[in-house]
Amino acid sequence: MATIGFVGLGTMGLCMARNLIKNGHQVIGFDLSEMAMNAHTKNGGEAASSSAEAAKNANFAITMLPNGKATKEAILGADGIIARLPKDSLVIDMSTIHPLETDQIREDLKRNSFSMVDAPVGRTSVEAEKGQSLFMVGAEKQDFKIAEPILACMGDTIIDCGGPGAGSRMKIVNNLMTTSLNVLTAQVLTFSDATGLDRDIALKVMEGTAAGRGHMSTTYPSKVLKGDLDPAFMIDLAKKDLDIAIKFSEVLGAPISLALEAEKIYKEAQEDGRGGQDWTAIFDMLHKKKFPE
Image (tube, one colour):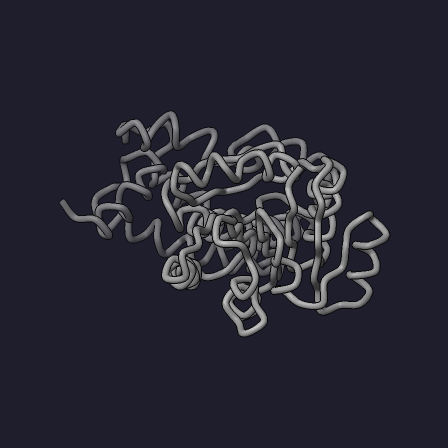
């Protein structure tokens, strides 16, 4: 059994602290919210008066906070974790913050002889409640091994994303995709409703194509990520279909702003001489512009 200082008992943190308790760990929690603290103690946790107090006898200090400023204060502040954390203990930050903030906190901890694991969380509070979170971990190999059993109490998928800072970077990359797709999904379903389609039928169709299944698991692995740009579906045809949707949306008065931005990129690809290539060649074009040979 480990003693764990847990700072940040919000919607996600409270679920995770409870799962640690269920797995036999002593969890000493701190949160600015009295309601959160009360809920934590009802779950069998112990309450601390500060981040430092939560960490004073801990084997692990976990932070799950809303932003970089709060995370830095909780870890490095005058009454922060490092003020009382034993020197052989490990800091695990599960917050979603700017990767450069993660790097700076890690460097500050290192100067104080502490090691840190960045392990931001994938999935939502629904999975966190069930102990089925996904963790994107950035750490030295030895620290990953130490943190893994603790993370396993809170999640069922633990991915070593590379060295220190890789977890924080992976979370931002992942969330760029999910947050952008959320808007696109909302726009597409609004457009679909505006055409008069039955929504359930539209969902059924899109769930069976790359529209719903996602390019990451369908078109990209079979084409551009293998270096194959021979067309399964040409950029010229994709651009033609996109233009039809844009023109139809104007008639219907349904906003599809992300499609307008995508159209610019398809046009750029055509101007780059890629009209006859597979539509996944958009990635090849963008990647070569960023990383010219």
